Image 1: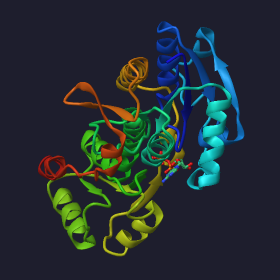
Image 2: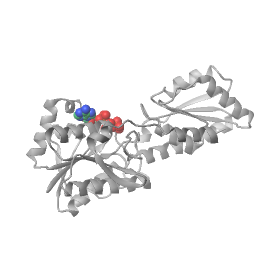
Image 3: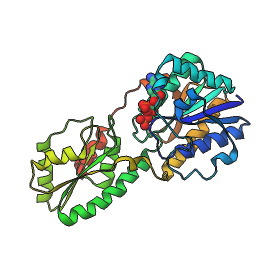
Image 4: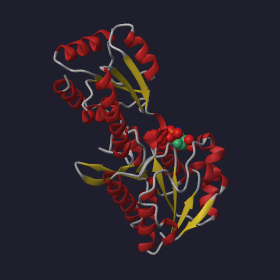
Length: 320
Ligand code: ATP
């Protein structure tokens, strides 16, 4: 394969730039020409294709966001849009494509490979950690660390005033950001889309912790369950302790990637290009049991994300 393309799609995630760098540099190492497609599938349809050189990716390993920018593109769901995307690839002689994004982006990649025969490799770039085939997605670690930084600060002020902090984190269908930030910040309670919650039980846990000498409480709520404002209002009706909501919001998506995400980016990007260089397409790369793996894209997108109940129980046992 002599010429490959690269795009970032869906929600941005810290580490996307480091992955872009790894793909471009690995491609150049193998003697390929690498083309960046700006604004995800929208750029593929509108033909915003730019050649990427060694120096195009200088000084971005540490940068948040994505240099290629990203978009959500409804036209890619239509046959007409998909044909335009394939036309752009053909026009530029692009023989293989790397797609960095989440579940939706992978579905687009699957269409390109399955229906149109474009060898495509998916790199899991999303803060949500909602893909079953990989233990971690790119950006998740940094996003959780951003949450921890904020929750640490909230803990200071909540303890001084003996309050209950309700912290909303991202996660519409997947509670992993809440689960990991809850455990790592020492929150007493997490509320996730995968598990039904009871306000009575939450109040019981708060009262028990106060009786045990605690001066404040932290409850991490995934956005898919309820917003922090609504949750705090509902909880306040059940307790005399002062309840304060905080929505962390889009800061979770930004910032310099952590060491863990930069390592994933380097390895995912390199693995994706090695596969294309070997003439292999229609795969996704990931990490399982600390080893970089690849898997059929159709199989990967058909897997349903499972919640880690053991970690949830761990939180319940150690947070009192
Ligand atoms: P995140 O997990 O951060 O939200 P994502 O990749 O899942 O990222 P989506 O908005 O779901 O984000 O998908 C990104 C883009 O992928 C869509 O805007 C669309 O262009 C394309 N896409 C999604 N589903 C399909 C599909 N079934 N067929 C073709 N293209 C698709």
